[in-house]
Image (cartoon, rainbow, N blue to C red; front, side, top):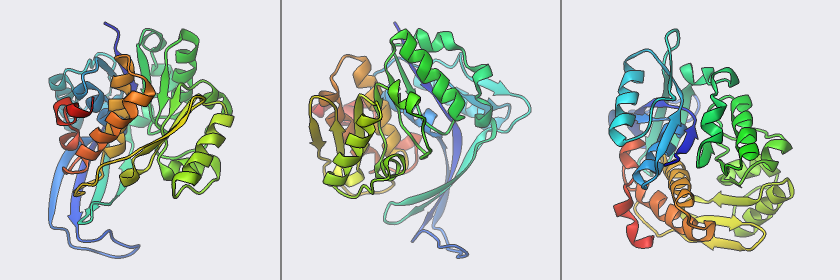
Amino acid sequence: MKSILVIGSSNTDMVIRVPELPAAGETVMGSNFRIFGGGKGANQAIAARRAGGEVRFLAALGDDDFGSTAIDTFQREGIQTDAIKVMSDKASGVALIYVSDAGENCIAVASGANACLRCDVLDESLVSDAQLLLVQLESPLETVARAIAVAKQAGVPAILNPAPAAPLPDDVLNDLYCITPNETEATALTGIVVHDLPSAAAAATRLREKGVRNVIITMGADGALLHNAESTTHCVANSVNVVDTTAAGDTFNGVLAALIAEGKSLQAAVPIAVAAATCSVQSAGAFDSIPFRAAYNSTS
């Protein structure tokens, strides 16, 4: 069976819970500290696997305890790890995360080995043989762009979660099956300040004009907006008690990829992915918050 190929970052997240996010120069006292697996690529690979997808993960890790722990975790999840590169002279990526009592977060990332995921370590046959490609922007842009181009040539649908926000060449946008920015990322990509449904629709239209066939703008508690040639659809999120928004977007993207790979239309997949992301914000951490399919299966 062909796999969903996820290319992206793997980090170890070090999380401090704080009453409020600190301002510049401010010290705040946290209530607790925990270590979680994370990184957008890893989060999305696990979300896709827990949604029922067959997943292969292409990442770069250091030859250290963080790296070996990550590989062990992926293997326990049932993710194919044969494509992971272990860099003997680099540290594995880490992220330092503050999470406020309101559930908001701010994150600083040291890429480490993730920055070594360059074109020269990209096995293009993995891309062309995949069922679907899922990528983000915590890996070098040249590698992401090349993987998307190879996918287009091979007829493999490519989904790009453009996070963190970065300028994207039009040829990358033209090669995509789907792009999934949040409001901040959509603003950065289009110059349209996204703050409500009309502005989200305008930004989605701008991205379609740049060549993307399907645009999904994720809007946190307001759900997601799907825009393509057929329609513009707003998928509403249920109101829940937010504990931690870390990996909510990654949950959305991984679940979306798994559902598309199993043959669901975007119109059918997006509400389910929204439900999965809504589940994730009710728990702390990245890997720990990513739900299994049973948690939102009534929607599917």
